[in-house]
Image (cartoon, rainbow, N blue to C red):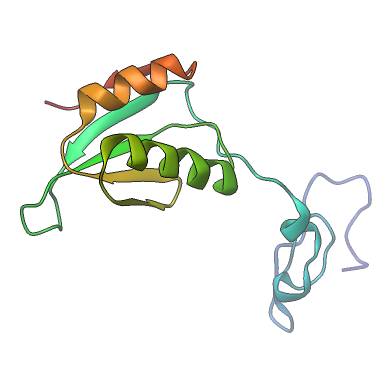
Length: 123
């Protein structure tokens, strides 16, 4: 680690002796504290997409909401509010809100009321 040039733009991300290294604090990823403190919000193209999917759900349809510029805690709160308005269940997985059933039109209206630029995606 000490052999690297301090003026270089490269950062150590893996060491055979230590494993994965955090590029910010240069500690092991398991011992890194800076990653846990970051309030990371996913970046998208600014468009919220609402689509219907049945893939991997044995024919049962769900409405997927992607592209929301929110953190995990805010996504869960929004998902709870939308599930209550739809009167159904759902979850948040990998930054995508899943609402059980086909509620695309209603969800687009509600998201537009909340100030998001939402649009229907897919067929």
